[in-house]
Image 1 (cartoon, rainbow, N blue to C red):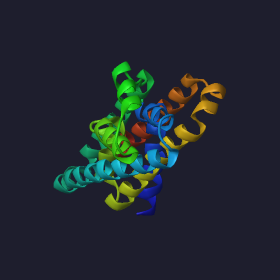
Image 2 (cartoon, rainbow, N blue to C red):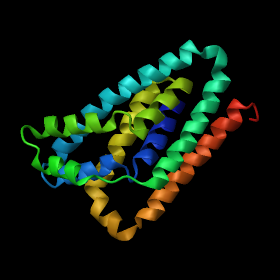
Image 3 (tube, helix red, strand yellow):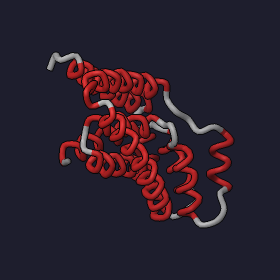
Length: 193
């Protein structure tokens, strides 16, 4: 469980760097108190990632006899996540406008927006892939912590990092880590490790 926790924390933290969710977090933080934004993000992330690990656990159990194939597919998926990360992510004008106009309780507004934004996002897919291989509880807690930590970083240090670290450095670093993890999974699934 500890390995699943640590692995998913790191993988999801890296996946979230430069993601649309971080941009949403910065936008919401300009309108609401950071504490309310973090609570909304945490609740939405916990729910989405619980669903993700449920799907991943089911796939891992249902196809236990074909675990090497699942590992190979997960490795290819992580190579896809690397390419997705290189492509980058931006908030559309409409998404930015909705984040700025959100009314009602801040936690509900942020939580709802994050829940919808994360459905089918690379962090959800990465969590599913991790849960096919690792302990579901450790993966759930770790992936939730990794995403919340990355979004908290966006809220608290986003402006400073944006001035100090070029976006390309962050994007290429995250893509390289995804690619390395994908290649390790492929090597493991092929029986080379």
